[in-house]
Length: 454
Ligand SMILES: [Fe+2]
Image (cartoon, rainbow, N blue to C red; front, side, top):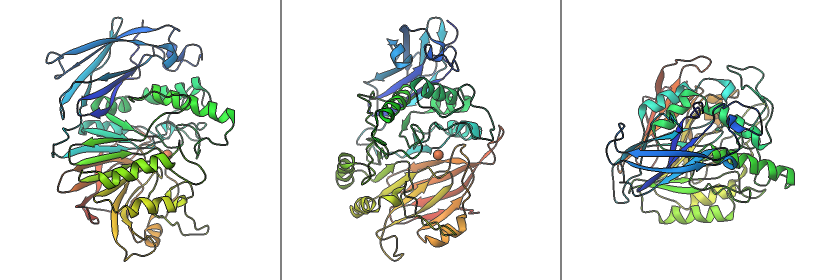
């Protein structure tokens, strides 16, 4: 067998005592043959995994054997338990004579711990729009955990102008083998592989993992539900998730807690949507009860869509209906919980924004009930946005920048720090990264340090 580790390795879903290890065997990752995804024959392949406390695999070695099944595109999801909290580990795989690169992962903190948590947040990585240099810099930071808030792939047909081509099947994708191929194309990127190998990831999705601006069950047709099930399956096959899709659904909303410091509530803003709600009743009930009862310092919503009101003035003034501005009553219920230490992280709009969450967005004098940080895209092109005009029309929004990048954060019992990290260009490799703004909150409002708004 040729080297099957062409898509890299990953880990995710950190708990105080365990993580999930991931890889997918693909000897020919861009094979467009639906009968041989990744160029693999339709039979199971034995994969050995190893995890240790050091990168030479000598301390505390654990290992096991799993079968990579063709029904799951030869992906492997190993749930390792019995680990120490707040500890680094290293892992790798072997199939036949081939050894994978090693990854570094980390368990979450002991429930009683109060140590600071270092985390990064990324989103929106349209492959043909640019290089993933931002991920190379993110990998160098080796955070405790990386969150991804959606548009991990784009299902759309290849853009008219490309920095690098999608390769085979450049059209809009709708079938399982096409979603697999699109994920594989993205995963062949060495910088993305480096970011996965540097830290455990916790991901949620937005719309483009399935279809542009889709909601829940779409039009309810069998064709759409087949398409969604195919997209969800391919998503699972390419992420280090703890749970598998079942009957065309995939449980995504969940909580990842770091000691007494940060409760990350990862939301699913797509699967349970309908005309009336963004989250659906069950997810909203789960979220509200945790917001009200969490004993943890920072209650952090990790989700794809701009949360604060964002009125865009101009010839066609508007509020974006696909975002939380299209679900104002639901947003008001979340804010009315008055959860202490409320922080929202978002993506979707392909620029950086920061602002305060208000009890009443139309009354600047009303109480500040939280803060929001919107991360720019890793590579996806930004829309034309008159940032200064939008800031002027929304006094609770305080920062805008239209460079590509990610967010690098530290949460401690005293404060939360968020750095906006931007690259200068994505149309070729090798951009440096710089901190373009840094924000500090102690839980009531937002202070910016070294901010250089354009
Ligand atoms: Fe996007």
